[in-house]
Image (cartoon, rainbow, N blue to C red; front, side, top):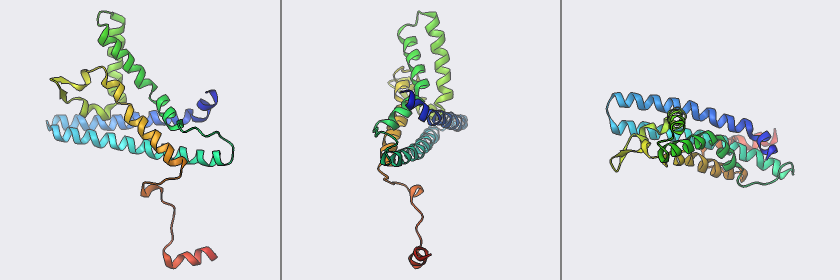
Length: 196
């Protein structure tokens, strides 16, 4: 486990920083659409922020998987199909920690210390998960989604699933995006380049 953290601590921090940057971007979009009082626009901007965040994670984790493919083939690293998921889980540890304290606050509202910590964690999740803010301001069953404690356990799951999938695709060198295509020469140039 120590080796895992040594190898991937940079990746975990980078994932968290990506999350913070996209969170600020998503929260800014939602604030702008809330001023316009347009629910559809608010939801669309939130979905766009979420998709952009997941796309960045996909690109990053695919690269990690592809590098691991080379290391595994050369015998420098053991194969671990859950590596992408574990990196994302560690990167989302702050989100899950906040979710735990928000849950404790919901179930133990009379414990002053837990309520205070839960309030701080709820404010922190707005900073960390701003891309979800637009979606979480919708009401379900007459209650706004961000009032449900279990929602805070669900929001990190898309990131974890994308990272698990992207890592597997990277390890197997499967490209589902034009961003991963290798340089290809036009038919007329191909023979010349091979000879050169």
